[in-house]
Length: 135
Image (cartoon, rainbow, N blue to C red; front, side, top):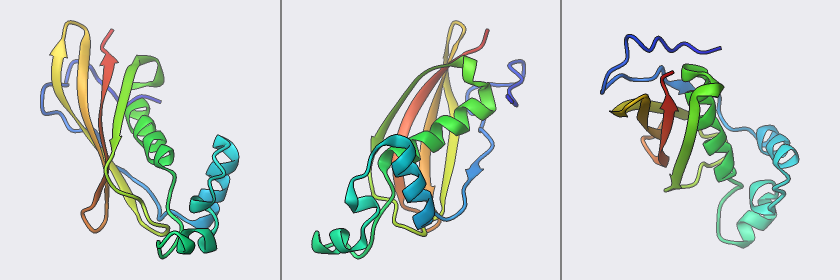
């Protein structure tokens, strides 16, 4: 369900943050099954350690999905026209991400949003933008 009232948005409007629970091993296993991405770096601690990483970490596409959820909850899924992201850091298991966004521009009946996923320690793991239609 959308929370967007198009009569009240302007450049600088902040989307309500999407605060997520800590990323659990169960979340990673379920996402692997749902997405078909069974890369062992995300689900097998021994493989992660053999690559020099202390533990498994979240799929980048999981964070991207959370950003999609942020935008579609705020604007409605029927308004989303594009979503682009750039991965900038990994999301360790047990990290707690928060998705944020703000309106940065308008072009006719389209609005551009700036998006980010940030961990509780301040690490930004994903940045991006989305375009939504206002009609």
